[in-house]
Length: 500
Image (cartoon, rainbow, N blue to C red):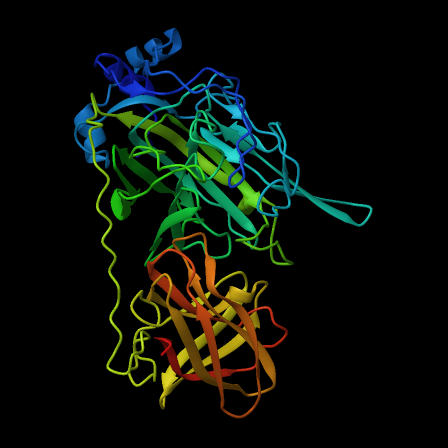
């Protein structure tokens, strides 16, 4: 069923009273980078009332000719009870409405080593057949390859504090694409530049792994993040449309796909170096705007390759964007007391479970060992005869393209750790080992360290000091991609323990 009845919904919304505390401003729109926002000279925002969007004459005429949908029908479509529409765009016109949206302009390489230039042009972000289309383009001229794409936002046009933020869309497919539906503050300097200002990523899907969805939260100084993921059992996010949303309330954010919650967060912070933390739930207590873009290349997706096609398959197609709110929100919330779930060591002092690979466990779940492929990496892993055997057919473009990990490592500040394992390869080659911090911007407790593998079992042992804040979510990693070989690797007897 097509969902085009925004005017009726807005009419219903305008019949309801909405008064919410905000801290927005009316500064000119800023170009908002995804990880290193440019400085803004906007003043600290004043508290203001969130205004309802008026229904235009055209919308009123449409309402008269269409059978209005009810709030109950919207609830049945997946919107929780108690919400009403405050703004949305069904993209029913012939061009992007610049009363609602800003085009962003950024040079190639501006952030995350991405390859695309963002250009304010309907060549790269346009409305067609009731959809917003964001279309990356590849250009080859005199032997030089360049990329252009579109990025649009609602900053200083539609900024909201709290609500249900939703879009129905289809992502592009192809190595090197990173589409995103996400949110940044109206005033990025209110708590300080990224990541202190906060960032809510509603939807990110790697173009070469289109059955996996990521939702993330960035905040703090030092930078920390929380991330959840969702894997489709059937189908993928590129060949069919899906609905992506966050429910953002004071002190709680939940991530949804097709009405199903797959991740939530309620504990975060922000501060300026040398100062006390800002009152919770900062930075997620200020108006945010939505952003839609398709990046090409960069640190996470890797660069396009010969398989990447820049035709319709490269486009992100957005059916609608809608924002709902409740009548009021109780902002008198307290920060949860952080209780770390520190994994206990076994009787030998080892924090790594199934370290001798005596159990043939599921290597796809989030318990104990997990085998991962990214950015063109291809291969398989098998536990047998007291070892794990990693067979690669393609090494991929990144060191982590072929990866074996175990999460939930308890890393205690001030302790000295010993990390050891045995390994060999069918042919001489290298791999890299590390102990990392997925929730603390992927910092390295033990740095990525190359180990040379020969054709016989060899023991590798390293000692390191844990100098960072105590973390119950460290991760042991073996990275086997993009190191010049696909030779099969054998690993056994992995140990992480506190040094005597």
